[in-house]
Image (cartoon, rainbow, N blue to C red; front, side, top):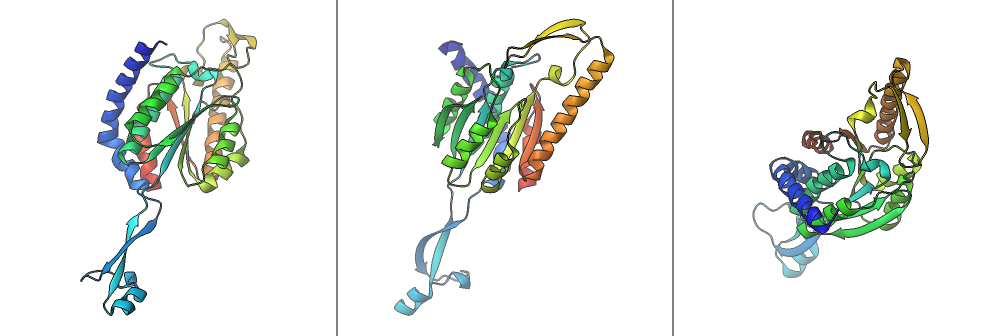
Length: 288
């Protein structure tokens, strides 16, 4: 993808997601991430209506008139994206590839965070961590994130969410909002997810394609696993095989959701091209 094409895609995503951010997501996002606590600002003379519990008794005794402590909300918050860039994310049969759909979701959440004056960071991972953008504020950072997602190489290997979670545990000292975006085709450590979820707010977003959920009857087909390179012949006309394939996918998704639920982490399953705003709104309302 050359530079001019990337700029066009970024502009298209910006126009589409800005509308979603302003009309829907920003209010829900802000209702949850409105501050991590209160911090001391100043001391001033008591005014009618001030809370008695805010009186600074040392200052009051010294000046022989009531003074109160003024507190303000701590506004420092970070949104951190962990995005899978293994080869399976370069798949799509409907409106868009899974990787481009991930970029759009990051843009919507990222612009909401930027409007809230929060920092936003990014980790791109497959079998290891490939790219790190430290959290920064402002719309320019969101454009940088979108650009990195669209330009990222996709690695033909089994993805390791564990490496990305280890990075979060080591590097994110303050409580943050961690959003994991992947197709979750490969296993990961529930223990590591639990450790991250104890310290941070975690949301898992599974992106799949409708053709991955249910295999059509198209006869004898040679399939290649784009992450391992392994080839296998499958008779898709076999109704029993199609049924078992569909049920295995359902069971895997159900188990994945239960893992996130067990650690009080959010989980959303999306299909490429699906309208995601409503599901994100429901998630934020639940957190609020």
